[in-house]
Amino acid sequence: MYSHILFPTDGSDCADAALDHAIEHARTYDATLVALYVADVREVGYAAPALSLERVREALLESGEQVLDRVAETAREAGVEVETVVTEGTPASEIIRHADERDIDLVVMGTHGRSGIDRYLIGSVAERVVRGSDAPVLTVRQESA
Image (cartoon, rainbow, N blue to C red):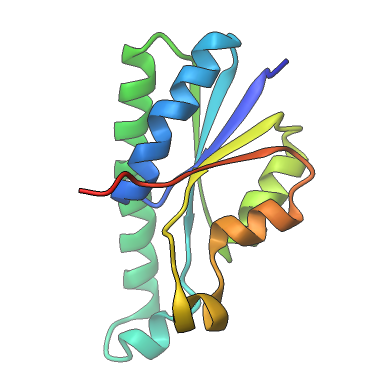
């Protein structure tokens, strides 16, 4: 049923909650887990104008590599084949593009559970992926503490 499962992650606790589901689906269907980190450098100039855009970009990409190293180690320990991809751009757009280009069968991702004005103004990456992806999307909420 599934041969390639996309797991987009930002390294957050919410994404980590979805990782268990992604690994379990990959193991159940003997699928390859494709872990994706999207470095979003759009607002760097506004958030940190004194910093070099290139330095911040490099730091974000390095952070993505570290996040994906942890994901890959966890997947391999569970006996799941894993590929890792670091890219940059708008997260939802890059997730959808990657899912389309790789013929992904299932996207498994965490939600951040935005509510109120934040959700109205910004929306969520997960919501945009659900609305824009041709592949089925499994969203996983982080359990309350």
